[in-house]
Image (cartoon, rainbow, N blue to C red; front, top):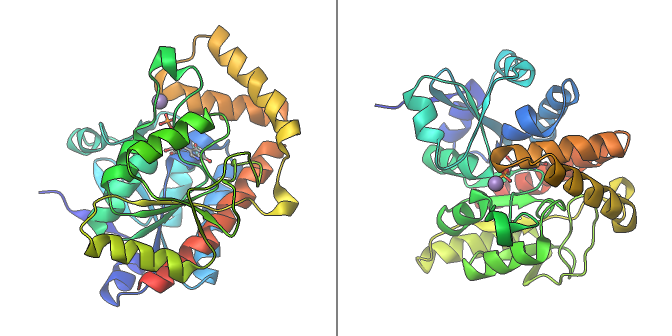
Length: 300
Ligand code: PSU
Ligand code: MN
Protein backbone atom coordinates (compact mmCIF):
# COMPACT_ATOMS: atom_id res chain seq x y z
CA UNK A 1 0.00 0.00 0.00
CA UNK A 2 1.07 3.52 -0.64
CA UNK A 3 1.68 5.72 2.38
CA UNK A 4 1.79 9.47 2.12
CA UNK A 5 4.82 11.12 3.66
CA UNK A 6 3.68 14.26 5.44
CA UNK A 7 6.01 16.94 6.75
CA UNK A 8 5.53 17.57 10.47
CA UNK A 9 3.78 20.90 9.99
CA UNK A 10 1.37 19.49 7.38
CA UNK A 11 0.55 16.47 9.56
CA UNK A 12 -0.20 18.80 12.48
CA UNK A 13 -2.30 21.12 10.29
CA UNK A 14 -4.38 18.22 8.94
CA UNK A 15 -4.94 16.98 12.48
CA UNK A 16 -6.16 20.37 13.69
CA UNK A 17 -8.03 21.10 10.43
CA UNK A 18 -5.94 24.22 9.89
CA UNK A 19 -5.72 25.84 6.44
CA UNK A 20 -3.16 24.27 4.09
CA UNK A 21 -1.96 25.40 0.66
CA UNK A 22 -0.47 22.84 -1.73
CA UNK A 23 2.49 23.92 -3.90
CA UNK A 24 3.85 22.17 -7.00
CA UNK A 25 7.44 21.09 -7.62
CA UNK A 26 7.77 21.19 -11.42
CA UNK A 27 8.11 24.95 -11.18
CA UNK A 28 11.20 24.24 -9.02
CA UNK A 29 12.81 21.58 -11.22
CA UNK A 30 11.70 22.61 -14.71
CA UNK A 31 10.32 26.14 -14.42
CA UNK A 32 13.14 28.15 -12.89
CA UNK A 33 16.95 27.94 -12.88
CA UNK A 34 19.00 27.19 -9.73
CA UNK A 35 19.47 28.98 -7.32
CA UNK A 36 16.41 31.22 -7.88
CA UNK A 37 14.20 28.11 -7.90
CA UNK A 38 15.26 27.16 -4.35
CA UNK A 39 15.09 30.72 -3.08
CA UNK A 40 11.58 31.10 -4.53
CA UNK A 41 10.41 27.73 -3.19
CA UNK A 42 11.50 28.74 0.32
CA UNK A 43 10.04 32.25 0.11
CA UNK A 44 6.71 31.07 -1.27
CA UNK A 45 6.39 28.70 1.70
CA UNK A 46 7.19 31.63 4.00
CA UNK A 47 4.55 33.73 2.23
CA UNK A 48 1.94 31.03 2.93
CA UNK A 49 2.93 30.87 6.61
CA UNK A 50 2.87 34.66 6.94
CA UNK A 51 -0.61 34.62 5.41
CA UNK A 52 -1.89 32.23 8.09
CA UNK A 53 -1.76 28.84 6.33
CA UNK A 54 0.64 25.89 6.16
CA UNK A 55 2.54 25.15 2.92
CA UNK A 56 2.63 21.62 1.47
CA UNK A 57 5.12 21.37 -1.39
CA UNK A 58 4.42 18.11 -3.22
CA UNK A 59 6.91 15.79 -4.95
CA UNK A 60 7.77 12.11 -5.37
CA UNK A 61 11.13 11.30 -3.73
CA UNK A 62 12.55 7.80 -4.25
CA UNK A 63 9.10 6.36 -4.76
CA UNK A 64 7.43 8.16 -1.84
CA UNK A 65 4.73 10.74 -2.34
CA UNK A 66 5.66 13.66 -0.10
CA UNK A 67 3.08 16.18 1.08
CA UNK A 68 5.31 18.91 2.48
CA UNK A 69 9.10 18.82 2.12
CA UNK A 70 11.87 19.48 4.62
CA UNK A 71 14.42 22.14 3.73
CA UNK A 72 16.94 19.37 2.98
CA UNK A 73 14.50 17.68 0.57
CA UNK A 74 13.66 21.00 -1.08
CA UNK A 75 17.37 21.80 -1.50
CA UNK A 76 18.14 18.40 -3.03
CA UNK A 77 15.22 18.61 -5.44
CA UNK A 78 16.13 22.14 -6.54
CA UNK A 79 19.64 20.99 -7.44
CA UNK A 80 18.76 17.71 -9.15
CA UNK A 81 18.98 17.70 -12.91
CA UNK A 82 17.52 14.29 -13.81
CA UNK A 83 14.09 14.57 -12.18
CA UNK A 84 11.09 13.57 -14.26
CA UNK A 85 8.12 15.86 -14.80
CA UNK A 86 5.04 14.06 -13.56
CA UNK A 87 1.50 14.50 -14.74
CA UNK A 88 -1.65 12.34 -14.38
CA UNK A 89 -0.20 9.68 -16.70
CA UNK A 90 3.04 9.03 -14.84
CA UNK A 91 2.51 9.87 -11.15
CA UNK A 92 1.66 6.32 -10.06
CA UNK A 93 4.32 4.80 -12.33
CA UNK A 94 7.02 6.97 -10.73
CA UNK A 95 5.95 5.84 -7.25
CA UNK A 96 5.82 2.18 -8.35
CA UNK A 97 9.35 2.34 -9.79
CA UNK A 98 10.79 4.00 -6.68
CA UNK A 99 11.90 7.02 -8.68
CA UNK A 100 11.97 10.77 -8.07
CA UNK A 101 9.71 13.19 -9.90
CA UNK A 102 8.37 16.71 -9.70
CA UNK A 103 4.63 17.23 -9.88
CA UNK A 104 2.99 19.46 -12.49
CA UNK A 105 -0.31 21.20 -11.84
CA UNK A 106 -2.22 18.03 -12.80
CA UNK A 107 -0.20 15.69 -10.57
CA UNK A 108 -0.15 18.17 -7.68
CA UNK A 109 -3.96 18.40 -7.83
CA UNK A 110 -4.25 14.60 -7.64
CA UNK A 111 -1.86 14.43 -4.67
CA UNK A 112 -3.50 17.37 -2.88
CA UNK A 113 -6.90 15.74 -3.18
CA UNK A 114 -5.63 12.42 -1.83
CA UNK A 115 -4.09 14.29 1.10
CA UNK A 116 -7.29 16.22 1.85
CA UNK A 117 -5.96 19.63 0.75
CA UNK A 118 -8.46 21.85 -1.08
CA UNK A 119 -6.37 24.78 -2.30
CA UNK A 120 -3.23 24.92 -4.43
CA UNK A 121 -1.08 27.87 -5.55
CA UNK A 122 1.12 27.90 -8.63
CA UNK A 123 2.48 30.30 -11.26
CA UNK A 124 0.58 29.48 -14.42
CA UNK A 125 -1.25 26.38 -15.55
CA UNK A 126 -0.45 24.48 -18.72
CA UNK A 127 -2.92 24.73 -21.61
CA UNK A 128 -3.32 24.59 -25.37
CA UNK A 129 0.03 25.20 -27.03
CA UNK A 130 0.28 27.43 -30.06
CA UNK A 131 0.21 25.20 -33.14
CA UNK A 132 -1.92 22.64 -31.29
CA UNK A 133 -4.03 22.23 -34.42
CA UNK A 134 -1.03 20.32 -35.83
CA UNK A 135 0.79 19.07 -32.73
CA UNK A 136 -2.29 18.24 -30.58
CA UNK A 137 -0.23 19.52 -27.62
CA UNK A 138 -2.77 20.29 -24.92
CA UNK A 139 -1.66 20.12 -21.29
CA UNK A 140 -3.21 17.45 -19.08
CA UNK A 141 -3.68 20.28 -16.55
CA UNK A 142 -6.93 21.22 -18.31
CA UNK A 143 -8.49 17.76 -18.01
CA UNK A 144 -7.42 17.62 -14.39
CA UNK A 145 -9.24 20.84 -13.60
CA UNK A 146 -12.33 19.22 -15.11
CA UNK A 147 -12.27 16.24 -12.80
CA UNK A 148 -10.33 16.89 -9.59
CA UNK A 149 -11.89 18.93 -6.84
CA UNK A 150 -9.09 21.37 -5.95
CA UNK A 151 -9.03 25.18 -6.21
CA UNK A 152 -6.01 26.22 -8.29
CA UNK A 153 -4.77 29.79 -7.92
CA UNK A 154 -2.64 30.88 -10.90
CA UNK A 155 -1.82 34.08 -12.79
CA UNK A 156 -3.81 32.72 -15.71
CA UNK A 157 -2.45 30.26 -18.22
CA UNK A 158 1.14 30.86 -19.26
CA UNK A 159 1.25 33.45 -22.04
CA UNK A 160 3.43 31.13 -24.16
CA UNK A 161 0.20 29.26 -24.86
CA UNK A 162 -2.62 29.90 -27.27
CA UNK A 163 -4.76 31.66 -24.65
CA UNK A 164 -8.02 31.94 -26.63
CA UNK A 165 -7.94 28.18 -27.35
CA UNK A 166 -7.04 27.46 -23.72
CA UNK A 167 -10.07 29.40 -22.44
CA UNK A 168 -12.31 27.68 -25.01
CA UNK A 169 -11.18 24.21 -23.89
CA UNK A 170 -11.76 25.10 -20.23
CA UNK A 171 -15.24 26.28 -21.11
CA UNK A 172 -15.94 23.03 -22.97
CA UNK A 173 -14.70 21.03 -20.00
CA UNK A 174 -16.98 22.95 -17.65
CA UNK A 175 -14.19 24.42 -15.53
CA UNK A 176 -15.15 27.59 -13.65
CA UNK A 177 -12.57 30.21 -14.67
CA UNK A 178 -12.64 33.06 -12.17
CA UNK A 179 -10.80 36.37 -12.57
CA UNK A 180 -9.94 37.81 -9.18
CA UNK A 181 -10.80 41.48 -8.75
CA UNK A 182 -11.04 42.44 -12.43
CA UNK A 183 -13.23 41.86 -15.47
CA UNK A 184 -10.59 40.51 -17.83
CA UNK A 185 -8.42 37.43 -17.57
CA UNK A 186 -4.77 38.04 -16.69
CA UNK A 187 -2.02 36.71 -19.00
CA UNK A 188 0.70 35.49 -16.61
CA UNK A 189 3.46 38.14 -17.01
CA UNK A 190 0.81 40.78 -17.85
CA UNK A 191 -2.06 41.74 -15.55
CA UNK A 192 -4.60 42.22 -18.29
CA UNK A 193 -5.54 40.69 -21.62
CA UNK A 194 -8.22 41.18 -24.28
CA UNK A 195 -10.16 38.17 -22.95
CA UNK A 196 -13.02 38.94 -20.61
CA UNK A 197 -13.43 36.51 -17.74
CA UNK A 198 -16.40 34.14 -17.65
CA UNK A 199 -16.68 34.76 -13.89
CA UNK A 200 -15.39 37.60 -11.72
CA UNK A 201 -15.03 37.35 -7.95
CA UNK A 202 -13.67 39.94 -5.54
CA UNK A 203 -13.23 38.06 -2.27
CA UNK A 204 -11.69 34.82 -1.06
CA UNK A 205 -14.98 34.05 0.73
CA UNK A 206 -16.95 34.11 -2.54
CA UNK A 207 -14.47 31.71 -4.12
CA UNK A 208 -14.62 29.33 -1.14
CA UNK A 209 -18.43 29.43 -1.19
CA UNK A 210 -18.54 28.65 -4.91
CA UNK A 211 -16.33 25.61 -4.36
CA UNK A 212 -18.47 24.36 -1.48
CA UNK A 213 -21.70 24.84 -3.45
CA UNK A 214 -20.31 22.98 -6.44
CA UNK A 215 -19.76 20.01 -4.12
CA UNK A 216 -23.33 20.28 -2.81
CA UNK A 217 -24.56 20.24 -6.41
CA UNK A 218 -22.39 17.15 -6.97
CA UNK A 219 -20.56 18.71 -9.92
CA UNK A 220 -17.09 17.14 -10.05
CA UNK A 221 -13.94 19.09 -10.83
CA UNK A 222 -11.87 22.01 -9.66
CA UNK A 223 -11.84 25.77 -9.96
CA UNK A 224 -9.29 27.93 -11.70
CA UNK A 225 -8.73 31.27 -10.00
CA UNK A 226 -6.82 33.71 -12.23
CA UNK A 227 -5.05 36.22 -10.02
CA UNK A 228 -3.46 39.14 -11.90
CA UNK A 229 0.25 39.77 -11.35
CA UNK A 230 0.78 42.88 -9.14
CA UNK A 231 1.12 46.05 -11.26
CA UNK A 232 4.66 46.81 -10.02
CA UNK A 233 5.91 43.42 -11.25
CA UNK A 234 4.14 43.03 -14.59
CA UNK A 235 5.69 42.99 -18.06
CA UNK A 236 3.30 44.61 -20.51
CA UNK A 237 2.06 42.61 -23.46
CA UNK A 238 3.76 44.86 -26.04
CA UNK A 239 7.14 44.08 -24.41
CA UNK A 240 6.74 40.36 -23.70
CA UNK A 241 4.69 39.54 -26.83
CA UNK A 242 7.54 39.78 -29.39
CA UNK A 243 9.86 37.88 -27.04
CA UNK A 244 7.35 35.05 -26.69
CA UNK A 245 7.00 34.99 -30.49
CA UNK A 246 10.79 34.67 -30.90
CA UNK A 247 11.00 31.85 -28.33
CA UNK A 248 8.12 30.03 -30.03
CA UNK A 249 9.76 30.24 -33.43
CA UNK A 250 13.05 28.94 -31.99
CA UNK A 251 11.21 26.03 -30.36
CA UNK A 252 9.65 25.13 -33.64
CA UNK A 253 12.94 25.37 -35.62
CA UNK A 254 14.66 23.21 -32.99
CA UNK A 255 11.74 20.75 -33.17
CA UNK A 256 11.16 20.82 -29.40
CA UNK A 257 8.24 18.55 -28.51
CA UNK A 258 6.17 17.10 -25.68
CA UNK A 259 7.17 17.74 -22.10
CA UNK A 260 10.23 19.70 -23.18
CA UNK A 261 8.22 22.52 -24.77
CA UNK A 262 7.24 24.47 -21.65
CA UNK A 263 10.69 24.32 -19.95
CA UNK A 264 12.40 25.30 -23.23
CA UNK A 265 10.18 28.34 -23.74
CA UNK A 266 10.47 29.54 -20.12
CA UNK A 267 14.27 29.26 -20.28
CA UNK A 268 14.52 31.13 -23.61
CA UNK A 269 12.20 33.90 -22.41
CA UNK A 270 14.33 34.18 -19.25
CA UNK A 271 17.43 34.66 -21.43
CA UNK A 272 15.76 37.04 -23.89
CA UNK A 273 14.38 39.29 -21.12
CA UNK A 274 17.70 39.34 -19.25
CA UNK A 275 16.06 37.66 -16.27
CA UNK A 276 13.05 40.01 -16.06
CA UNK A 277 10.56 37.23 -16.87
CA UNK A 278 11.84 35.28 -13.88
CA UNK A 279 11.50 38.25 -11.51
CA UNK A 280 7.90 38.67 -12.64
CA UNK A 281 7.26 34.93 -12.37
CA UNK A 282 8.53 34.93 -8.77
CA UNK A 283 6.34 37.90 -7.78
CA UNK A 284 3.21 36.39 -9.27
CA UNK A 285 3.80 33.12 -7.42
CA UNK A 286 4.04 35.04 -4.11
CA UNK A 287 0.86 36.90 -4.96
CA UNK A 288 -0.92 33.61 -5.72
CA UNK A 289 0.34 32.09 -2.47
CA UNK A 290 -1.25 34.96 -0.53
CA UNK A 291 -4.64 34.63 -2.22
CA UNK A 292 -4.59 30.83 -1.96
CA UNK A 293 -3.92 31.16 1.78
CA UNK A 294 -6.93 33.46 2.18
CA UNK A 295 -9.13 30.98 0.30
CA UNK A 296 -7.78 28.08 2.40
CA UNK A 297 -8.64 30.05 5.55
CA UNK A 298 -12.20 30.55 4.28
CA UNK A 299 -12.49 26.85 3.38
CA UNK A 300 -11.23 25.66 6.79
N1 PSU B 1 3.94 27.58 -14.11
C1 PSU B 1 5.14 28.19 -14.04
N2 PSU B 1 6.25 27.45 -14.34
C2 PSU B 1 6.15 26.12 -14.67
C3 PSU B 1 4.87 25.48 -14.74
C4 PSU B 1 3.81 26.27 -14.45
O1 PSU B 1 5.22 29.36 -13.71
O2 PSU B 1 7.17 25.48 -14.89
C5 PSU B 1 4.72 24.00 -15.04
C6 PSU B 1 3.52 23.47 -14.27
O3 PSU B 1 3.95 22.38 -13.51
C7 PSU B 1 2.51 23.06 -15.31
C8 PSU B 1 3.45 22.60 -16.39
O4 PSU B 1 1.64 22.05 -14.85
O5 PSU B 1 4.44 23.64 -16.40
C9 PSU B 1 2.74 22.45 -17.71
O6 PSU B 1 3.52 21.68 -18.54
P1 PSU B 1 2.94 21.09 -19.92
O7 PSU B 1 2.69 22.31 -20.76
O8 PSU B 1 4.02 20.20 -20.46
O9 PSU B 1 1.69 20.32 -19.57
MN1 MN C 1 2.32 19.25 -23.50
